[in-house]
Picture 1 (cartoon, rainbow, N blue to C red):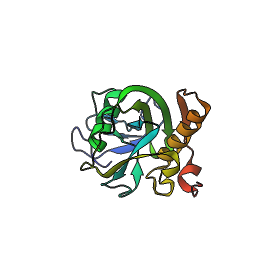
Picture 2 (cartoon, rainbow, N blue to C red; picture 1 turned 90 degrees about the vertical axis):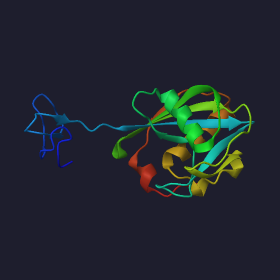
Picture 3 (cartoon, rainbow, N blue to C red; picture 1 turned 45 degrees about the vertical axis):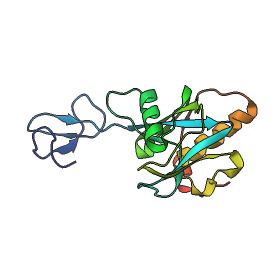
Length: 185
């Protein structure tokens, strides 16, 4: 950040009085510009044991597969955002959504919230954000072509939970190693 979004004057990076972190501060209008993690909300849509995945038609990770998810908008709950993103990316409607996972990824300043939900019918379609949408059994998931480590982790946890026959809300911090090491399948 170079300029204040309130008055357009240059900002400086300093620790404001009473704070403990570097912030962008405007000495002209005394604004402190906080930069906080982005929240991504998504759905793990399931129909007859298969998971709905979307092939990305946009960057980043164009042509890679992902769960329908995206940035939460101001004024919406995580569930509302997850349902909106599911429809925007797959034209799928889901029911019985339950909180499934919360993943903190501090090194990229993101928090992911996934809901596990049921598709009442196999109704879905490509959208401007997804060039292809499909239902996948565990053995058919394109593991080497998943867009993001958090998607792989979510899917692996889901299949483990399904095999165990219990679903609890998961909370994990995704360490840097997941972002830099080759994925094993």
